[in-house]
Image (cartoon, rainbow, N blue to C red; front, top):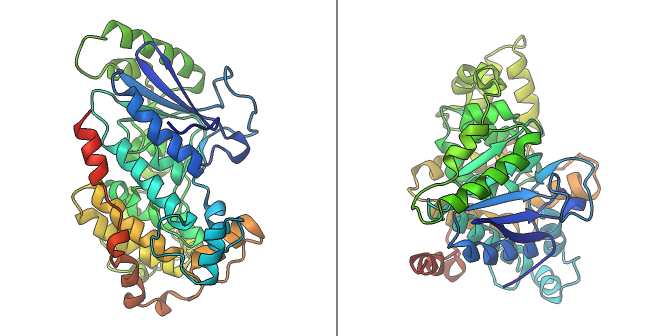
Length: 401
């Protein structure tokens, strides 16, 4: 089993635990953490529940505290950037940069391995047996890769500290880690709005949208976990979900009907739902007039994003809505991720602007929506042939559990 101190496994009662422990990076996922989690999860197959937390609230094993609470602030996209630029010191990645070989799914290249491993972990979480529910505690920031290791599990707990976003269009990427599966299945135009704008959501937004399943105050999380452990021992010989009643006994209403999403559901549907193109969304927002704070703020946000990412995201959400399984969505996303790894992609410019030089002034290419052709977007969905993401191995492992 692969191991790293950045993802710590433990057991208590009949509950398996994984504690993310990479506080210096707000628990952002790197390949070591992804592979460790992938190997840890099957070892919990005889237990009653799985709890995924970060080292923010459990002092027993944390050796370094982050200044800001975080569940998982995303994937290590800067590491992927360094690999694609040939700056990470790996001979394979350096040579691939020289030969323009990044972005075609080739094994043993960091720009492919990271996404392949991450998406396989997402799939494993999404297909866990329902009687062994995963409970993810979003006690802080949850973005990108952090969404992928939690949103596909059965239960997602928001606290007063939760801040959720899928901000990938701001870095020349797209909402991945199964985003093309869960976002278009949200009510009305919410998924499209969240995916294109990268808007930051509060706990009441998450409960309203059905993204979080429970709201529990941070100070009560420890007690909830202890009660879950006791319940798991009491119901050791029973078949079924031992977590549901425990979670409901701690759940409170965060005021979801007063949330931003609830108050703007109608205008979000009006401007984002079932639109044929990003240009149509822009027209709908402009039609709200300058007196609309929602319209003005949303337009300003979209204008900062990569035009290619906006069009790619909208098309991927449309296709994802029609795909019947998360496996098919993740396979599509892997194809998309690899095109984003090719030389000249907006991904490299987005990461440079946000995480490397931090000037927050990306030079997108193309820089205008009208210059991003349908043909250019279609390339992102083309098969990688033998390098396509394959879940047959995962099916075989699950059938033996």
